[in-house]
Image 1: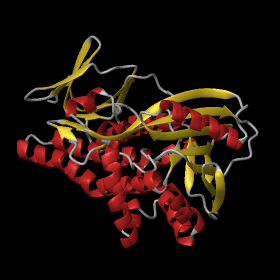
Image 2: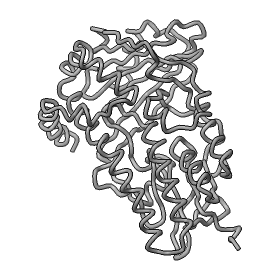
Image 3: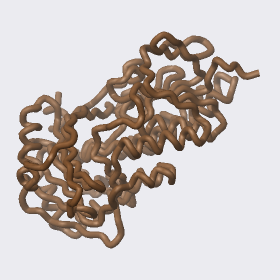
Length: 389
């Protein structure tokens, strides 16, 4: 008889990675518990852009969170030289994360997972038969644990995730009930190295944000205020202001420790150039959920190890090449932002490539595979690595 006190899989963190892991594991027949320290629905600092990669990785029910679909995209440099890109069909979706994440949780619950919010994990300990997950005044046990509680979460620290870089993102939600940006989003490459800003429209609000490497908080705040002035939105009503630390893994960083896997931000999985993380969370969470369910079903230690190793292999095969290429493109942005803007905004190939990346019909590693781009990114990548050390 199954042990009622032993879960097959406990997932820590109910963002896109955790909810996807819980849903996929439950669909595979595992007994799953999904935990999150916040009360849902909860706000999350995020632009809320859904690329083609995300669209293919998420359940259909989550499409209900779409508040806008983008057909026009503006690229500028330091607030000037804006070039508008147009597509006849939408190539990006826009969501508010509290709604999007709640729908992903609902999909996991519909698949059979149990969900408990307001539960903060205090620690993990692995025994011979299970992993102990310590809460406030309670201890739970699972055959497999999946950590998806962010780069500063308990599971990331337990596994020993190492980060190659980090950035600070600042965001403001503006009240804009009658805005005319529906269907149009903007990117701006900033004056500081690696910085960019965005405007993403939602149904009755505008999400305005900037991101650049950590260590320059005053410059990051100044860039955000400058971007608002350039958009003519400095006097708009601010509904919410927030910040978020974005971190990506080093090449040698582990993806698991024993029977504990990490996915999404907890594993440092995102694309360093655009800092896009939702698709990496959805995809890595699904991979982790499938591996965890497979490992939990078997009593054979060798088969269990093979299933868990399969997760790391899938991430390395499917996601790591995109991350590596994104890091190379970040080097171009940091060292030659004007040249990058000219290529993406002022050449037909650049514009076509950028739209393809948004649609998910082309990957960043395909762009970096160009011999000329590869040579440039190799040289600049070395410089960037030295500068960040």
